[in-house]
Figure 1 (cartoon, each protein chain N blue to C red):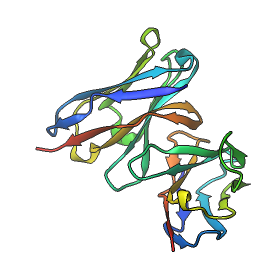
Figure 2 (figure 1 turned 90 degrees about the horizontal axis):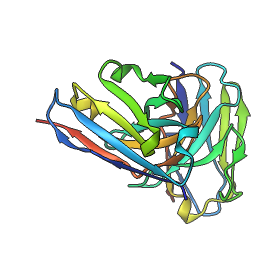
Figure 3 (figure 1 turned 135 degrees about the vertical axis):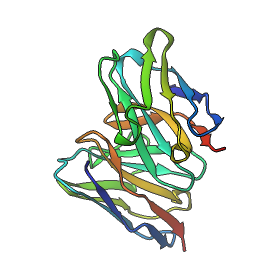
Length: 107
Length: 116
């Protein structure tokens, strides 16, 4: 199985800060990498697919980049409503695997 | 509007069985792979199984192989997960989701608790 190593596991930042989360795959997954946001008690929401494509309707402050094994998720200017846990997920090979999550908090 | 509504969760004893259902609407159900993802309390996301549009291909995470069976009824726009020989570690919220590689629509989840 492909292992997805996400870091950091938690992050505290101020409103307006630039926030970056990384995800490393245990093998080359090309760009088959998605990012999800999950708020407490809610289902995950797809934000970015194929490493860098923003889902329609998702604010442009969210972005993704990377390929092969190294990927980055960025919030350019943190907003209070962005408080959530974020997950990466690969779909190059089954089983799909997720990173362990990054819990984002407001400082 | 795409909607996925799970049902069938509840409390079950270890070794017991449960069948989850997912009613889909707002899209052409028979045109999409569908998937189940679970989340243990306070933990991360774990992909469980998925099924091809016509049900001809099914895949499972190793930890549920031989115990869980995914199926679908395209005439009823419904997805199912038959769970047998349940263990405490299967306790989780189970999400039904549309699968395009990217899991783009999710249900609200149904809680399965395996405990004596």
